[in-house]
Amino acid sequence: MTLSEDPDRRARRLIWMIWTGFTLVLVWGWVAAPIRQSSDTIPWLVKAPVVALYLMWPLWQGGRLALQKLREAPLATWQGRYYAFGSFQIRVLVDEDDRLLIMASDVLDALRIEGRGRRPERIRAIVGRDGLRTVPRTGQLVFTETGMQAWLERNSRQEVARFALWLRTQVSEPHRRMLERGTRH
Image (tube, rainbow, N blue to C red; front, top):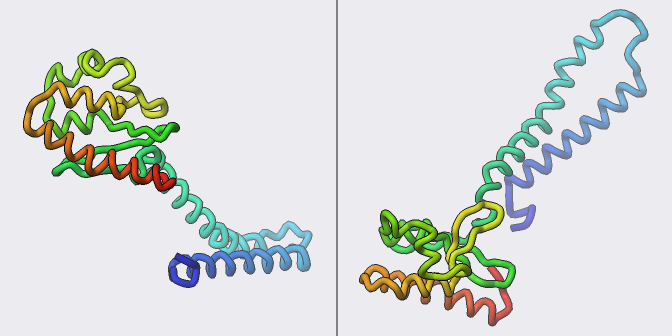
């Protein structure tokens, strides 16, 4: 979307241009017509509200931007990598070698795995050491694609078979096709 198509961006741009112009006027006014060299505080009291109002726009915009970045920071790794299996959300990462990493807790929740079946040691015993990894920045456990397949093969429940089919058709194959075309997530 270009600047001309987005009225909010145009409005923000206009406000920043007005603010910059006002900055130039204030600087010129204070340099060209300096405050009297007296102990009289009236000129400062008159200019103080103007200066406060003048500083509100960049402080407001800066605060808004900082809050937005703070809200997005925990999700930055997962941004745009959510899939839906039934009513469950499955987070998927692509590592540096273009391999899929599937969030273990999401899979376990979607398949309603409870108790000791959720323990990382037990899952690693099934999928191997490389089948269940920890994401470095978040510390969360993820299945590799091969680990996920090994874990799914060990269970014969109908829901697991449905999940395996969904994973292959909705996540793995589209990812491979994108890699073949040379595009990434």
